[in-house]
Length: 197
Image (cartoon, rainbow, N blue to C red):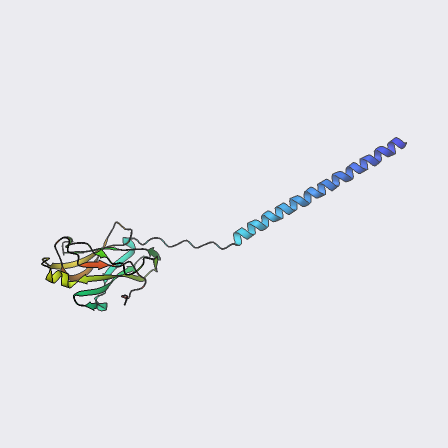
């Protein structure tokens, strides 16, 4: 009888230990699952950085020279070379456009525009329907006094920064036709449509 009681007590103690172990494991699992749920919720609630707009392509832009903003004297004139976003979304650009003058048959007249380092390049975002610009400098003195055989230009050809495709804009002026006679200079693209003072 005493042996039976002793076995019963040992069995009861073992069951109690098992129950405590199960309870402890259940608590650990609950804590782990709760932490995982909290971490997932916190991650999903964390703000995500907005993706930058795509780079402006030639197809996104219309180019033109705003002659109403003509500025300058002493044989050098400045115009804003306007880049208008005609796409349905914002796009971004950075650096110098490629610029040259052409005749009515789209033949290039003289050298492409040199680079003017008046401003440091920065990313410019052009909203849909918005306009950015680069300062375009025209050396009329170089054209008219250096014997560079001027001819009438009908268009300005513009390669947006980092683009291999160009766009044309109407611009009538006398272009130098000799090589190594720079008469156009251009700055990096700048925000807004207005010529920099």
